[in-house]
Every structure is written in structure tokens, then in C-alpha cells.
Image 1: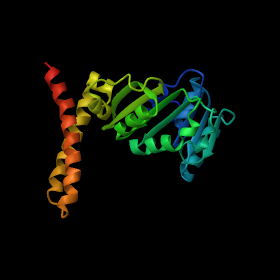
Image 2: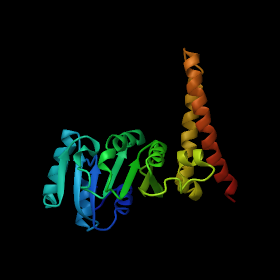
Image 3: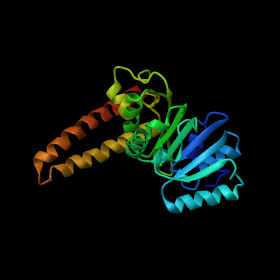
Image 4: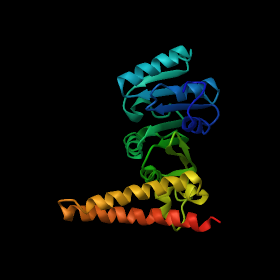
Length: 242
């Protein structure tokens, strides 16, 4: 991967950047995404935020080699602390767990006024992000699920709006699996949730051997509830296939 040829998942993130945006890429690693976005004219300026020293240095080197130092600022800091309120209109966060992305958004909420779009690519637990978006008035306007190198990724795009709009009476299921992804029911979607169901079944078996059965029972109930939702998504998919 380089600034001219991103991975499939990062290309999907880049394709959702609004024209002429000023972006902040949080956890930018080697700054491939902001370099690509600015070089291709998708963004006019960018901030690459990174908390770890190694990736921060790699990002600075990448921006320098691309000759984009006047358009891309590389900043050290945790989450959204690398930007000022009103400084950017699009935030991208890719390649982290959904729980971490959610905490970054929650801790940096005061930086979000003026941001028109969030493009989020969690590696797992996208449902945590959907719940945060719903609670905080961000409308999920698009979702994508894809497989790359044996891993399945989801991309969530949100803008300020009617946060309830994407959801129906199946809200609990839609928050878990994605309202738009549930409607589309792609091969990647089905593969992901069959895999998740199999993993949860293993956890349930292991809980039977737990020493503290009282504590295990609470976890077991939570897993069974999630498993039931997943099976709804899988069953509805299989029922609709010829």
C-alpha cells in the first residue's frame, strides 16, 4: 500500500470524503489516507493525528516525501485533541475497534460542532458506534461491508440529521448488524454473522466450564440475546435466497 494505491477498505473510506473537504484522519498511522485524499483533490487540507511516536514519525516522513507539508499537518495527540473546534468539516477514523472509536468520539464531542461528516471504519463492534451516533444526533446515511485479505470490514458514514431515520421496528437487530447492511444482505454480511455466531457458540460452551457459574450466567444471558439477533439476520437471509 502507498499514497497512490490504498487498500480496498481505505479506498472505500476515501471515496466518501466530500469534495473540497478539510479532513482530520485520527490514528493516521503512515498518513496514507490524508496524503491520497489531498493528492487526488478530494480534500484541500488535512490533519493526520497519531498518538504513538513510531507511526507519527512515519506519517511526517510520508507527508514530507509526498511534498504535502503545506497542506497536511501531522500532529501528536490522543483522538480528537489534535484538532480545534471548527477546524475541519470531515473526520475519518479507520482501523480501530468500535469501542475505541466510540470513546474517541465521546471524549472529543466538543470538537465536533462544524464537522459535517464522520467516516468510520471499525474492525469490530460497529454496533457500539451506531448506538453512539443514535444517542448524539448523527444520522447514519450509508454503510458498506467488504472482505479484504480474509477479514471483513464495515464502513459507517454519518452526518448531523435525524438519527432515528435509518431504523425501523427492528431497531435492536439493526443497531447490531446495520440497518442498510441488513437490507442488502450481501455475501460478506452473511459470512461475517455466521462467523460471529460460531464464535459465540464456542464462548457459550466454555462458560459451562467456568468456576463461578453465577457470574458466568449473566454473561451467558447476554451472549444468548446477541446470538438470537444474529440468527434472525442469518435466517432471514437464507429464507430469501432461492
